[in-house]
Length: 421
Image (cartoon, rainbow, N blue to C red; front, side):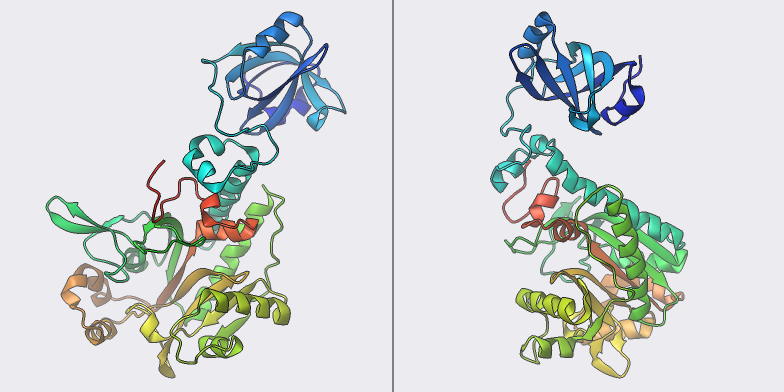
């Protein structure tokens, strides 16, 4: 007999089945015992009336892995309307040790450190798993949308000889006797691959040695990157980002009942200098503070009915050297941040594509072009106007689900304090 999954029980009424999973919960009443079995598809109820079998079930603690063979019976009062009766229950391993939290409860009330310290176990809880299913669906939606737009998925090194953004927030390590760094982003690689494949994307870890101990920062997170050529300016990048987020939201809707935002026909856009004015900030501020982002999120919802707001034209002094300047005023750039419910979610924009511009940009910042020779070589051999964006997966999921801390949507967080489990 092949294994039947819990979600398949409705099609098996009256038939013998074999279920395999974890003992999620046991309940003993006067004349009957109930076993709630958990597998990757959900929960099912097993009804035990034989006294010998009830005694055997008493010796099988929660989280023990078992096999159940019995008959599927329709019962409107059972969870899902179906249950397994006349069962035989066989452990598939040793009895489980009592877990650090009660996984059978509908919600986990444990403190965040407890959830993270015991992540290998606490991710078994259905409510916790539902968070990661949102992330997994988002990844599928990201890939599927870009595949449909003619992008090629790439995989780039996470060990680099130089820093991508700057030298201030990189993890340095010994690479066979010479210095190397964990990649802050795949930025250089994805740009050069535009010269090979024209449209590329990647999902993978990036590393930021930033001493931030906040609910929105991690030292390692999952970045969803896209880069593509033959654009006019950063507005073309925003248009593709709009399609991508639409695909991600549609994928999430297929697996979760979380309240999703309505994606506007186009993102409302405000220039950085106007954003500062809207929030009453100093006009010389080089960036938006978190409280500014929250206020702009409220403004976008109030004025445009949108959970999304694109802020374009960030100051050149705040953006990396490869960022394309705003043609009519080089103090600003053809770049943007997309705010989602008052939090920076995406950074993107148009890049430089001519080698002379790169040489001048590096010289203006006092950097040696020789340190970036492998990167600059691509631009000496012809690169189209191009741009791209990057989405932080964990932050996206936290905003979608209303999580109060990005660590709740990270399988095994790495931050200023945590390196295990």
